Structures are given as structure tokens and as C-alpha cells.
Image 1 (cartoon, one colour):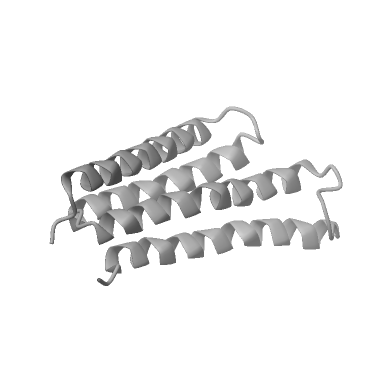
Image 2 (cartoon, helix red, strand yellow):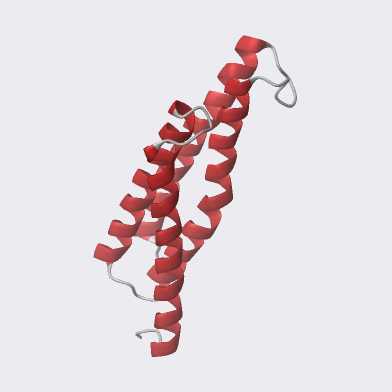
Length: 134
């Protein structure tokens, strides 16, 4: 079974990950910091934006792939995938603009991410209990 919907969101997530990685590299190059953060606040924040994305992406994308393999409607898959991207952009903007402190983007990005992972897990459990459509 092809995972065409999941492939779209994995690909878009990969591009977003590269944007966040470039944020780290750009500061490292400008400040000539090869390893660690050298207590550079901007670098620490950029590293957390990138790192936080990498911490959540595998679980969400795996749950999305499982839901697609188990026959969840493309409409729901796209809704979850689009919300995922919005959440991760909100979080990245919020963490950056809030300079590591509170920012609505960071709060709502985290909230949406947690709700999506929870919903995808419950959906997959429901599909398992009800049986995968053949």
C-alpha cells in the first residue's frame, strides 16, 4: 500500500527540518562556534527549535503512516498533517520570538502537537480494536 499522504507530510517536514538546521548553521558560522553553544543565547534557541522538531517529528509521522496503512480517510490524514506543519511552524516562531520564554506561538504549537500525537495514537488504537478494513 503506497503511503502517498504520509509521503507528502514527511517531505514537507524534512524541508522544515532543513530550515531549522540552517538557522543553527547560520549562527554557528556567524559567531564561529563549532561545538556546543558557547553560552550564545541565540544559538541555544536555534538549537532547541531544531532539536524540539526532531524530538516530536518521528512519533507523529510514524503514527500518521500507521493510520494511513490502516485505512484512515485521506481527509483526516491531510487535516492532521496540515495541522502538524502549522503547529511546528508556530512553535518555531514562538520559541525564537519569545527568546526561550513564553510566547503564544510556542504555547499553541506545543498544545497542537501534543493533541495531534494523542489523537493519532487514539485513532490507531481504535483502528486496531475495530480491525483494519480489508
